[in-house]
Length: 336
Ligand SMILES: [NH3+]CCCOc1cc(-c2cn[nH]c2)ccc1C(=O)Nc1ccccc1
Image 1 (spheres, rainbow, N blue to C red):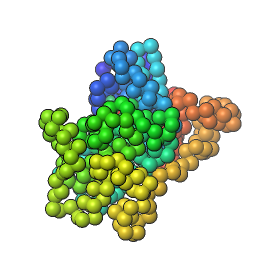
Image 2 (cartoon, rainbow, N blue to C red):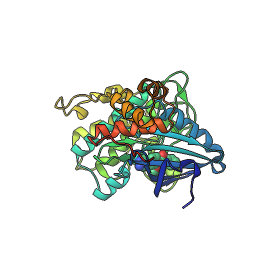
Image 3 (tube, rainbow, N blue to C red):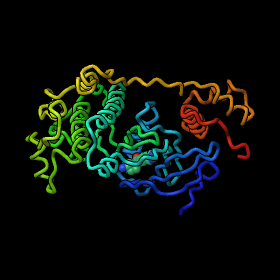
Image 4 (cartoon, rainbow, N blue to C red):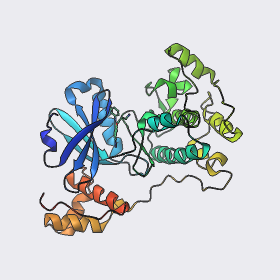
């Protein structure tokens, strides 16, 4: 296994847990806390035009704090590599979770869809569109909650989420008709279409629009016609149809999704919240533990942490906050 000098003493690399195009993802241990992390490793010489995607992803991830978005811990850059350290999601990809079960029940699909909806509504509230929503980019954490990853295609147009985008990107089977036609499109509306495809995949274990030939696939997407299995409830069929509207202006908005009757089971559940409640912004118990370990004044360390530099201090602080939220004892390896 190649040794990455930049990680020496900070993270112990264990095994590869994912590969995608220009990156490989390794499971590693954060040395100071013993906690597990995922490290996305990219060799700059292999990035080419994808360098832009890495910078997009980093700029997005640094601003995102949400229970269902894979948390960024640290960014390391050397002459030859980028290392993106994130929380570790031990449950693997949602894609595999669906395949193993053939398809999910309406209740399980609703639980997962509510979490994805919360993450996407949060992204949109900050002016970002994800643009590559699919089960391969959604992971399960140890407690079976969902975490969105891969922000390499996300966009934050200057004029806000409603202003038009022109880059055609994402995975064809999840791509909205307006994107497929190469017309200027609104990232938020295209994300809602992809969420409709995603919900169909959760409930049926298959894709509404699928074909080996790309031009046949595009024709099916543009037709907006897809097979509705008889086992789908009327409520599920109606809800999916509201997202898979070929005309983006007829498509349900993300705000309307939050309180839709399928989401709340006709009022049985609360509408989906997307504003994150987290004490991760300031947890002085974690700061005090780090300050005593480093033998520095608490206020001095907090002044440094408040800058969110995404250095090893940020990673250690966030690891401690996550472990505290899980009820795990807070400790730092003193001999490090
Ligand atoms: N389809 C996902 C493969 C694994 O990829 C990841 C896993 C984790 C992960 C695993 N456990 N916890 C977090 C965190 C990030 C990624 C990721 O961004 N992968 C990727 C995306 C685009 C291009 C190349 C690679």
